[in-house]
Each structure stands twice: as structure tokens, then as C-alpha cells.
Length: 352
Image 1 (cartoon, rainbow, N blue to C red):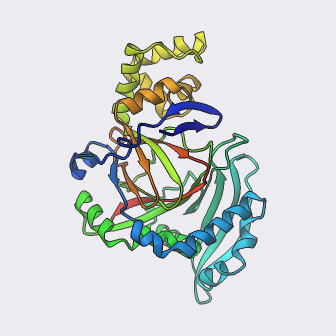
Image 2: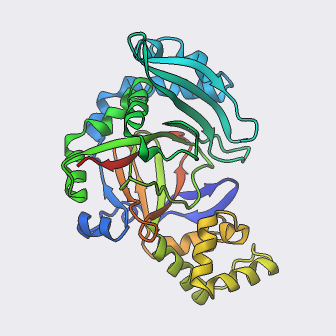
Image 3: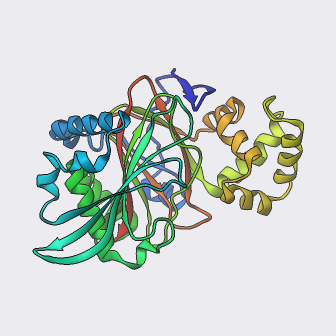
């Protein structure tokens, strides 16, 4: 067993070591269709070993960012500059003072000789939380106006943003060139091919991780997450199942002591109206609901006991279906141990 601690909240323990890595017996196709995560143990273990030098280089980059060095100046040096140029031309950094989690956004143009073939590609570095003791961060690659532009409408720039990821983090090929993984995805998606877009490089640090959320995006079938170093612990289940489990918890357990009287009244109202509960879940703004499902030991342990947890070790892969609002797999992540781990999280786009 290992302790679960995230953003200052102690949330109990993982399961015993003989059960926490159990392989789901259900068919991958069935699990995917139901919005359940698909666990592929050691799927990337062999290819991960071939990228040891790249992973170590990335660890140096993260250390520099945590120490306050700007990404743009690091990427202007070897080995990055030789991989970026001449195709990707850096335009410098921007800083969004209105986003306290943003560290830096590095802008790029894609070039073909002297000709600009795409503008507004970017790499965005952000902290995962506001907690002082959580150094978890991520690098996200995309283009255009962040969170406003319909990225699925421009597959050309989406593909170039993916190639930009390859230039900065060559270990991306642990996913993108894994023929066995790609064959499994083509089978699950009933597709002739698959593209890996809207890419994120994650670094989950001690006391860190992600709260329950989804990654639903038009045109994307889901997410592939590959653990490259460190260990993470996951809670993952479809949205409708999460709603039912919140209601089940309210009927079988007392509200945790950390909920104030007002929070308990609000939660009682929420669980009495499934539509309202779903609406508040999607809002990511209801503090009572956020606290219950992410920050109370009682609810976290309830989901673990109900069988929704998975532990990832280096080389493991987790597939998260995100096709529809009702079946998209909501997921929550914890860093296990004292090591900040690196992981790849790429959106899956069927290529018909």
C-alpha cells in the first residue's frame, strides 16, 4: 500500500500490491464502448528504454523551468535548436498575467524554406495547481487562440503542432511509432489509422496530480497516456457512472466531516436531481462538489473500493475514451512516491 496525498489533502491508501495492478478481464472493445479506461501494462516498456537519453534530457529541461529559467532561452540551445530549425522558427515568449497557472507560452511559425506555411503554433508551460508544495507541471502543444479555437477544424496546423512536439520531446515516438499500440487502437476505433494530436507532456510531482476531469474535444476519440518515469495512481470512470456513484455514496455513507453544514445542504440538493448534479459536475465550479469528490478520503476510498482505480508504472499505458459527453471517461491522477514522473498524454484522432 502507498499513501495518497495531493495538494495538502491526505486521502488514504492505495490497494494492496497484489490487487492494485490487476488487469481488467473485460474485452478492451467492451470497456472502450462503455467509457471505461483500458489498461495496457508494459505496453511501452521496450520503446521507453530506447529513449533513456531523451528522457534524461527532458528531466534537465524541467529542472531549469522549475528553477525559473524561461523555456524560450533553453530551446534556443542544443539539442533543441538543431531539432527545431529550420522547420520551426521561434517568435519568442508571451506571458498571460491573467492566468496564474501559466508559466510561459513559446510561439512558433512553421516554415518551408523562406515561406511561412503555418502561424500561431505554440508550446504552453503551466503549473497544474496553485498549491505551494505541488510542482507538477505540463507542456501543452497546440495553435491559435487557446481554449477558444476549434482545433479539430484545422487538421493541418494540428498535425504541425504534433510535429513541434516531436522536435522538442523526441520520446513522443514511444507512442507514435509503437506499432503494437497503434494496431490495438485501430482495432478499438475500427479505423484504418490513428493520429496523435493536441499533445501534452506531463510531470506529476509529489503532493500533486489532477482533479477529476474529462478531455472531451470535438473530433477526438479519446486520450492515450503513457507513463515514462515515476508512478501514478488513477481513478477513472464514465461520467454517468460517476454521477451514479456520487448518489450511491450519499445513500450509503455520511457526508465527510470536512463538509460544512451549508456544503452538506448543497450536496443533498445535488444528489436529489441528476440533471442538476451533471450540470454542476460539468461546470468545474461547485466548491462543495469539488471538495467531496477530490479532497475527501471518504469518497476517494469509496471509488477505490468500487473498483475504479489503476496504478501505472514506467512503461504502462492507459487509454481513456472521450467520444461523447455521456460516456467520456472522467479521471483523477495522483503522484505516488517522492519522484516527479514524466508521462505522455496525446489525443487520439481516427484517421479514416
